[in-house]
Length: 621
Image 1 (cartoon, rainbow, N blue to C red):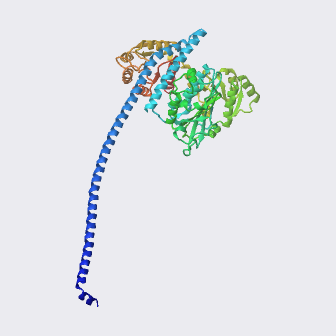
Image 2 (cartoon, rainbow, N blue to C red):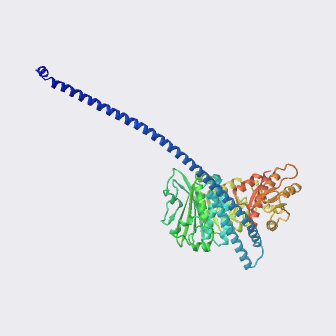
Image 3 (spheres, one colour):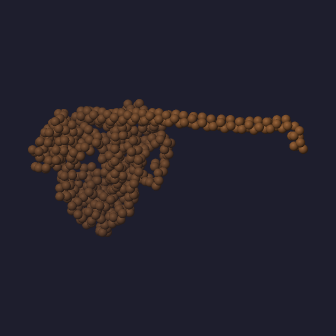
C-alpha cells in the first residue's frame, strides 16, 4: 500500500528525499563546525599556554635575579655589620687600653699610699680615690664585655674544672670587700655537690662576682649577704615562691619550670637584705644601660650593664637566671646551670673517718655549729671547744678510754697553743689541722682559709686525705717549706720592661714596698732581650706595646734562647684586658699575665704564686 502511495505521489517522495538529505547534511555541517571550533580552541589554548609558560619562565628568571641581588646586598650589609662590630670592639679595646694606663698610676700609687702611716683624713681620702678608680675600672670592663657579647666575640669554653678553685678567688675578694663595708658573707653549700663541674670557670667567676658585688653594693651597713649553692633534679628552675619574680627567659616564650629530660642542675643563689626591687623594675634591671630608678643610678652609680652581661653569660653556659624581691626587704638572684657530675658519695668519706673524732676548736660559736652540722651529715664523730684549754681538760677526763681512735684537731690559728697540743698528742693519735687567714701555724700538716666557705664534700675529703697521710713526714716538710718560702721573691732579681715613665715608677715602687730591691728598668723589648741575655733575671715584668720591639716578640726571643744561664720567667703587665691577648702572651712563652691597673696586692699575689710553684718544683726534684 505504501509503495502504491509513493508511486502515485512522486513529488512527495522527491521532497522527502531532499529533506532527508538536507537534514543529514545539516547535521554533518554542524558537527564539522563544532569539531573545527573545538580544534581552534585547543590550538588557542596551546598557544596561550606556551605564552604563559614563557611569561612564567621570564618572571622566575627576574625573581631569581632579584633574590640573588638581594642576597648579595644582605651579605654585603652583614659583612659591613661584622666589620663595624669588629671595629667597634677594637675601638673599645683601644679606649680601654688608653684609660687603663693612667688608671694604673692612680690605683697603683693609691694602693701604695694606703700602706703607709696616714692621718684619718688622709686615709679616708685615699680610700675614696681607690674606690673611685675601682668604679671607673668596672665601668670600662662592663662596656668592653658587653661589646664583645653583642658582637659575638666572646668565647665560652666548657670543660671539667674544680668547683672549689673556681669559688675560692671570688669568695676571697668579696669577703675582703665586704669587710671594708662592714658586711658579712654567709655561705651554705649542698653536701651532695662534688669536687668537679663542667663549665667555663672564668665565666662562672665573672657571673658570681657580678651578682655578689651587686649584693654588697645594695646591702645595708652591718648586713649579711648570702650565697647558697644546691643541687636540683629534673627541673630547670625551682618553683618560684612569690609572684614578685622575673626571668629574661619569660620574654622568649619559654615555659616556666620546663623539664628537659632527666637532668641535674646546680643552683647558685645570691641574696641581700637591702632596699629590694619594685615589681615594676624587675624587667628593667636586665636591660643594658638601665637601672631600677634614677635614684639608684644617682646613689650607687655603675654602667647598668652588669645584669645584661650576666644574662648573656648564663645563657652561654646553658642556664637561666631569675630574680625575686620584696621591696624594702630583700633581693634574691638565682642562676641554674646543668650539672653533669654524679652526686658526691658521702658514704665513702664516712667509712674513711669511721675511726676518727674531729675536735673543733674555735672562738666563733655560730661557725662551729655549722661545721658540726656538716660532720653530723657525714656521720663523723666530733666535739666542739671554744679554747685549747677546754679541749685539754676534756681529753684528760676521758683518760685512755679511746686510745684506739684518731683525733683530728681542727684549730683556729689565733687560739692555737703548741704546748697543749703536744701534751694531748703524747697519749693518743692526733692530726693537727688549722684554719684562719694567716697560715701561721708551722706544725700544721694542712690549713684552710675558712671552714664555712668550702664545699662540705671537699672539706671532709681533704680531712680524710690528711688523716691517711698523717704518718708521712713529707706533708709536714712540704708545708714548712711553703711557709719558709712565703717571701722568697724578695731575693729575686727582676727586670721591668716598660716604656711609660709613670708606669715604670709605679711598678718599681710597688716592688720596693714588697721588699724587692734588686730591680732594673728598660724602656723597650729590644733592650729587655739584650739585658736578659747578658744578666740572669728571675722574673721579667713585660709590657706588651713598646717601641723598637714589642713585648710579644721580645718574649718569644727570650723563650727561644738556648745557651747561657737559665731563662727568666716572663710576666706580662699590660693594659690590654682581653682573653685573646692573654692567650697570645702565654703562647709566646710567658708564665703569667697581669692586667693594668696593678695594685700592691695583685703584684704580690702574682709573685707569691710564682714562688710557690718554684718551691713545689724543687720539692718534686
